[in-house]
Each structure stands twice: as structure tokens, then as C-alpha cells.
Length: 156
Image (tube, rainbow, N blue to C red; front, side, top):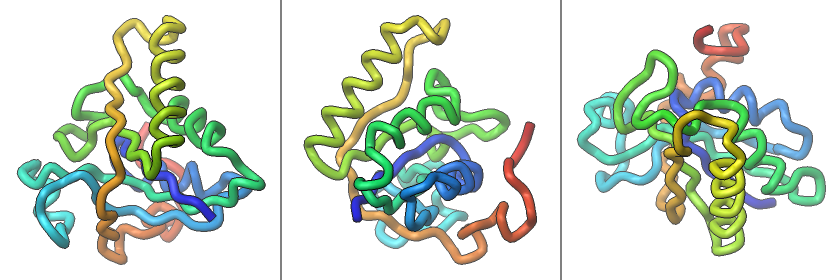
């Protein structure tokens, strides 16, 4: 099994999206990229910890490739938004790919460049690509949040 970690706005929707993918064996939501140990939702929401809301995907590379996960990432949010997605704003909602190794970093950078050069968006792609750091699992009530409520999306 391998891991992929993506920040693409509020983590509830991406957890549902990736959880439906054949070959994804587990999803978890949490925080990554900050400089405070053991952050919680309240502190991350202040925007002062540097953390991003992320979904961490554990997947079977024999069934789904990292490239396929990247394609889902790109089409499941607006990668041109800076520090926001939809109605959610703040640095914790920034678009980011956390690469777990050099191969992921190279694939992510190539896919970002190809997307940016494609002209698919009227603005440049704002997604950053950073080395994966400690994944801090979010509070239990955030795990499978939408699924527990019978919802598939956060907002229209």
C-alpha cells in the first residue's frame, strides 16, 4: 500500500471523492504542513499554524495509480484559487499536493505543468507541491463526516 496526501479546500468532500475510487483502501482527514505539533481544528482554523486541511489516501498501486489520483485531484477542485475553495477561505484551505517521495513529486510537478500549459483555466494553477510532513489525524467527528450524514458534497 502507498499513501497520497492532498489539500483541496474543506477535507470532507475530498474524503468522499477519493473514498469511492476502486483501489483506495482507506481515507482519513487531517492536517499537514504546519509548525505546531498535534494541532486541532480550532487552532488550524485560526490560520496561524500553517497547517492545511488534507485527505490522506491509502491506495493499492496495483489497482489505482498515483497518476489517476492526481487526475481526480485536479478535476475535483479549482486549483487556481489561492487560500480558498468555494465559500471556505483561509490558508488552511489552500491547494497543495504533499509528495511522499521523489517519484510523487516529479509526477505532481509534471501534471501541474501540463495542466497549466493546457489553458484549461483562465488563471495560473496555484497548487503548491511540497514534501509530505507529519499527518495529524483530525478529530473523530471529522472522519467520514459527510458519509455519516448521508451527504455526498459540502455545498453547491
